[in-house]
Length: 166
Image 1 (cartoon, rainbow, N blue to C red):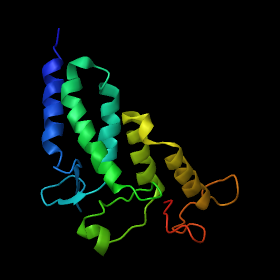
Image 2: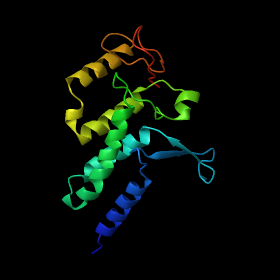
Image 3: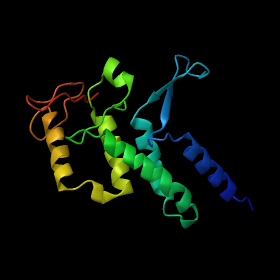
């Protein structure tokens, strides 16, 4: 029988070594789909959210808990530092030059990727105050009361800031 344990441990070691000091993971962008030799590294919230969410499934296995928990804790710390006061998230990490020079508004896909990952890590992180802010955010981008969300809009209702839904 094949022993999967060394493979899982090698994978978790690779994930841990790819994690940056701040807790985030670097994404790579390339003009060539099959060639990342000249890829440009970026610090984004999306990959950190995705990795944190994926590790939620493995956390119940006590055998790997000691390897997974530090990764998840650091990723969570990074994401919590990246949230706005309204609990929205941006694609770019907020301390990067891209956030300043190529700004995107906070958007729903990055926001809810982060929120799902944070909820899977610790439901208590998303308290009543956070839920109120999240509901306000959603209602600010709905096409009409009760939905649907206005697709492609980059504006919230007056007084609520920018939010992209694309």
